[in-house]
Image (cartoon, rainbow, N blue to C red; front, side, top):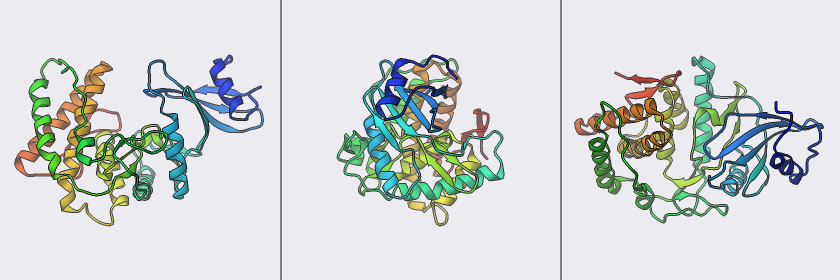
Length: 316
């Protein structure tokens, strides 16, 4: 708990209609764009206040729009009570985040429930692809435009890895594969669907949080992103809750293409953050999926996934 909260935290709480006097502010794990704090007011209100990091984009209007749409669909999500370009006040979801180490049977059950919730979220149709603004409007009119919108970036240099060749090969496959993506209207995607953004009480999903990355897109992209960042057993559980049976065969290739696109972007992000171990993980994931494409052995769950301790693990 911090004894002297930043004035912006107090101002945000007051603007949202709460008495900031005597409120307790506890820092939470920081995100890429926000510094979040758990807040308990003198009256017992349980809230989360976020403030924008210097130099980051303001995406709280996006979160507010997405929260309203998701809650209208009957999905438990953090409610945005007030926001500006600089700060956001939202309700605090009960339960615990789905990020236990080591994984337990209750975590796998919660992941299956999360798959059911995600399927409901993906039933919400939006009008365009890509990152959504505060009015629910994306940046692209076609799935190909969204899929191929990869900003030019400097190739990182890592000892023992030929990243230029790997990334060039990946980009070639993305360019060629974009014509194989399924057609259909864009659906609402959470945009950062990982275990730490899902809350559970071990019986149901009690909250979906961190909606600043909401976008329009193909639901397979959301599943691909989860599978790259979560351990294999929890991905299998989520897929089991999402699909009525095995993943349809005609969705495997698009799923792998989305994995390649996301791993490609994540590798560059980790390089900027100087996270060498994560760069190596993403490179290994890219190489494995490219090799599987060459041999025609496509799988719903990546051969290389992070384990519960965030290290690379190879599947048979």
